[in-house]
Amino acid sequence: MPRLQPPPGYVTAKEAARRLNVSDGLISRYVQQGKLKRYGPPERQHKFYKISEIEALLASERFLYMPGQWRNNPVLTFETATEADMPTIFEISRGTFDMPMTPALAEIRREWLRKEPEIYHVVRDQAGTIVAYACLPAMSEQVIGRFIRDELEGEDILADDIQRFVPGKPLHIYIMAMAVDPQYSQAQKHEYGAVLVRGLFAFLLDLAQRGVELETITARTYKPDGLRMLRKLGIPQLHSPVPDKSLFMVRVPDSGFPLFERYSELLAEWRQSHQEPDAST
Image (cartoon, rainbow, N blue to C red; front, side, top):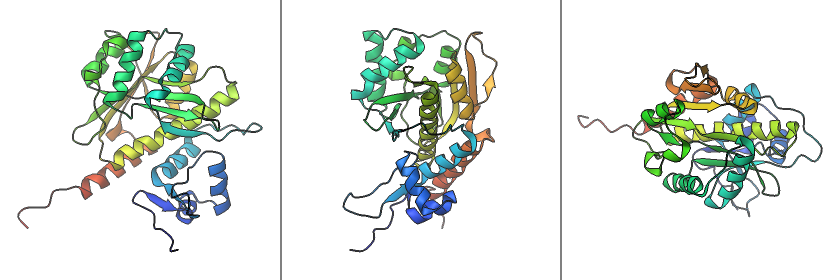
């Protein structure tokens, strides 16, 4: 049976090892640790690796604090959330932010997900349990501005305010939440948070490869864990109009952070490949 060639956006194990400057054996260890995923038909021995996940791993190895493995560390995976995951996400949110998730607010969040299925992302352990999540809606600058000035509450932002992750116009992402289940130890929270950030790195690079143009990324936090994760994402901290909530914002095209520079390179490549032919030639 001939060996399959990797589809666009994927590479072989040998090429993945070359890009990461590691041995083939270390690639297998990365898979065992949940740092990389293998893709391909189950009946095929030779699998492929997603380029965006390889580059996200490179970025995370350079900029994330990665503590040593604790005994029997489970394999962790980063995935797009589904509506079936929402009750667990709501429970982690309640425990992290000390805020009640009313039925009305829960339904609004589900409507967000129906409007844009890639808003929520989760980290799962080997048993499939959600241990961390992130919520990244795209909204207008006006809505984000009112929200960070506390002129809007969470339940005031409706599905009509949520924008799709599609090419065509610059988008503004607001990181509504990045949370690790508070029941875990500090060492586990560091590890789960690192996987969450690394997965978000890969997601942003995926958006660039699809021609989705991000103009700004904004976030607020009042939690120490949130401060750490936002700094690892490479988002500068700004003066906040609300004193007890730290404000972070980056203009992606202007950022010198390596992840965002790579995002801009991939977006430029997508634009180049999707240019309309010159009618005069």
